[in-house]
Length: 126
Image 1 (cartoon, rainbow, N blue to C red):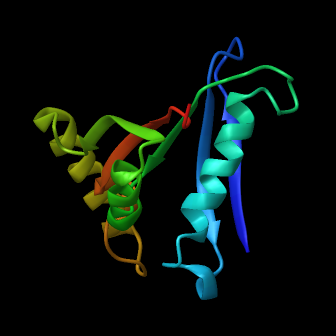
Image 2: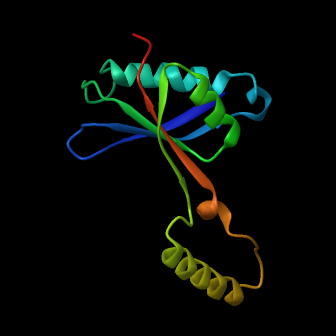
Image 3: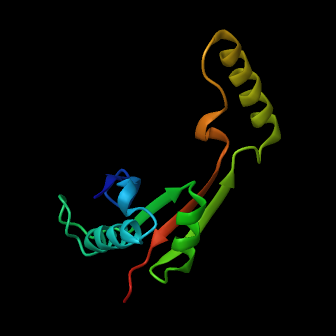
């Protein structure tokens, strides 16, 4: 029904949850957020393969999920980045992307690289 992947920062100081996937028939029912909260709470209590409590970061570019995370008292927003805030870097990326696209005969668009990404930290409900 749902899946989320976890990785850790060097030194096991923080976990990062990513790739939250919810089967289509369960999307929009709140299952994904409840699942994410349950797993992040387990990591916060140290119920993980390392046996060490760790706070969890989660990044998303999905606008609906970002709104739900902002409303949830267990989460706090820690970052919001729109690719393109550094104009020189953006121009370079656009030029490189255009050059790659020109070489390809199929495919279109820029993918997720130019989407807003918002970061959240799981605080728990204590």
